[in-house]
Length: 309
Image (tube, rainbow, N blue to C red; front, side, top):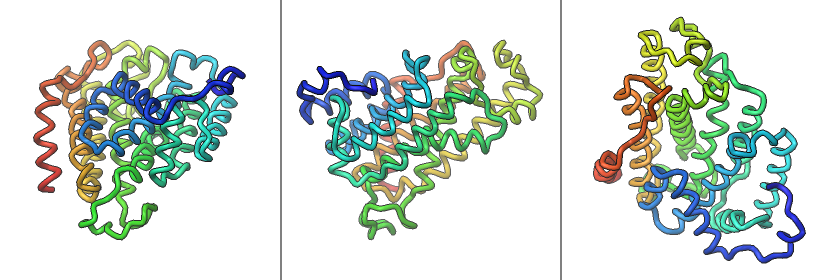
């Protein structure tokens, strides 16, 4: 994946439009809720977000994908060097073409991309987190960074207090809110995927929280659902909801043509927490998801929020 063969070097890469179409297809296949939200964006921003999503997904798959067993720290070092090449305007494959084009249109900083790679490095040697502070760093790197990557694409509203933004981070930009939203979504993923992660020998719920509710690693691996587990999950869900709430003020200052999208994506993702509750906190045997009817109901509510808040 990280080394081009002579044949790849010789062949012509995809056109810009074809590359964006490849990114669209990947996004539509693997991130249905997210893809639905991107349909509400202006075309240029929509395509840029697809390109960023695909890079993030490919980075994640180095550690969690089918070939993850062969991934080493050196693999991720090579991936970072390839990232630097892309930022220099040199695509390595068909997917990179869209990202290179996106970088030419929007002044996106490379540092959040590097931070995400550092987050994947953590997954190579950690399968437990003692405290929420430790987990929070991981969540920032693998998800909070996505908000930072996207900010230059989304922009802020001219009528907001951030009107004088010159496309660089500053005091007027909702940077912390963007990070909070990314972390909230990652915590939602963690709670939804407890059973799946356990089957891979991973526990992302902080061990200090398990101890607080007298729930053990053995209980988790056995899928024990009792009052201890329900109280533990309520505690985790409350933490995630507080982060969603802290992110909302940042949505209000985004560019008007993007607010509906972000409100919709935020509302849809947060409803996964509702689904966990409806499933009586059974994240071992049941998959929490948002139904198509609930998705459709979210859209007008998100539109109203984008107009009045």
